[in-house]
Length: 169
Image 1 (tube, rainbow, N blue to C red):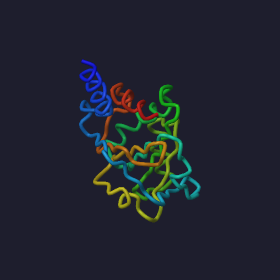
Image 2 (image 1 turned 30 degrees about the vertical axis):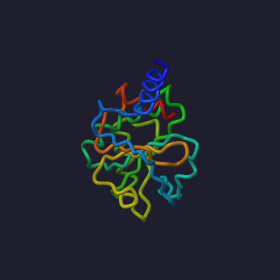
Image 3 (image 1 turned 45 degrees about the vertical axis):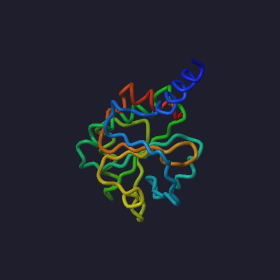
Image 4 (image 1 turned 120 degrees about the vertical axis):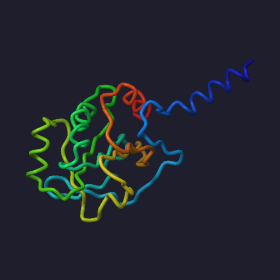
């Protein structure tokens, strides 16, 4: 009997991080590590992802012309201020080489206030992360390893998603 209880406990924990209700999340069995992930802030200052080690990161790759990106952006803005995810840092990286003025206008039009836009550096992050389309969100744990990715848009206000993400916070 003890063995059965232990077996159930262990298998429940092994699969606790699965999110079958959200179809476009891919969880990696072996987290991926990247070297020199560099992007730019509004002032063209180079930002290295390693500056954020110790935080749970969500790198959201998007463009102003992308309708699904526009649709998910307000819920992404809400996610940044979710009280249950205090260690989460959202890095919204525009990969379309769009002007800062156009990006600022996009953020203002959607009332995005809880995170800043970032920009792809001359070395394309789309290639680094093998992106197949946008929006794509890369989830990086506190140790700097990609543990999952979201291909396509989701509602970041979804409580199932938030509860799952809390297990990594």
